[in-house]
Image (cartoon, rainbow, N blue to C red):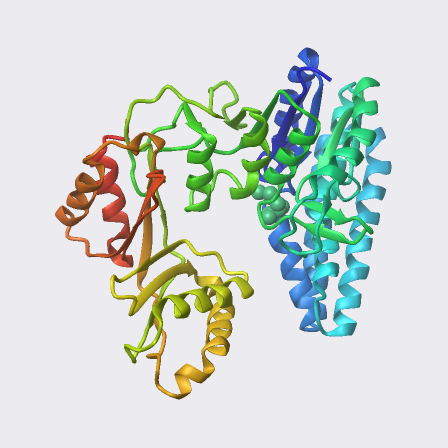
Length: 468
Ligand code: ASP
Ligand code: MG
């Protein structure tokens, strides 16, 4: 299949009948020119609502459960009525109702159990994508195209890490090609649910919050697509969060590595794991805005023609800095570090930054705040003995921090950027707590006091002349 275009529409691009109509128009235009596969997110806020419903079920809050179900039903049936001609509504309303019925049954089960088994949560939470795929396919059909809603659970094969599964590319390739390619050859537009997959033996999984981008990139990779377009509600990847730096500009192009670093370090525009399957194969990605589809967006590929230097600065405020310090100089610092890392791996925590002092006596790492309870439990368990005997000081947790990351492949081998960045931050009177630059020189991560984060972002953005 040559020239295949995979397009993914995010939650706001699917958020109402009006938005689905715009997305449909984009699909129709592209489908005239080349084979197209569509991947959709749930309508905006629906995934949160589904998860909240499951929590209410677990807490046996029948009243809230019913109110939520009513809201889910309302949102989709309203969109259906506004979107489809009267004679097409009945059948689709029935299908919507039946998918919501399946969700309700899982919720009832959770209420009975008083707990939320991860596999049932994954099955239930993909309901949002199933509903939006159904609406999109029905809409495309109503406009005279041929389309078919498809459940990603039948296409994307993953491991069994519920809630954050990883795709198994070979079996996915086999399944997805077998089911999708014949449809395209037949002139049918596949509308695939993002976010979900299933294990080889059919247990439902999801790819992590925001995982529809990842679904689209997995499908683009295994279908050997020519391009992936990701439709969101912003103009592309920006030099900074425009709420922090009002003169932030859209980057016309970035490399896969830069985009991945930006995503991992807090830029919300792409799911961090999206780029790996594409980078390997050199499939270019465009990040585009469905609210202004005429704008070019950001192109992500292997090489760009940008000048030397930093490209963008991101920030994260929902982070904590944990310090580990030996009380006894006899303690082998490298061993402490390696055991601490093993404990963090066990807790599935992601290290955003790690730095250590020269004499191995102290090291610190930055993790997401929501990973803190798990990570601390795992660390305390690993070092119970050292703590009890006073070989290690109590772990120090600093919650009053933020992370600023400067990203740019062009910083490699060019002296002076780090100096300018630190000077700019100190001129803004913001204290730097920890610094990390990998030897790839692709990013410089700087941990600062939370209160100074915004000022520091603006200072660096201005100093590096990243804005408009
Ligand atoms: N609907 C899912 C979420 O909100 C996946 C996505 O939107 O990409 O996390
Ligand atoms: Mg989303």
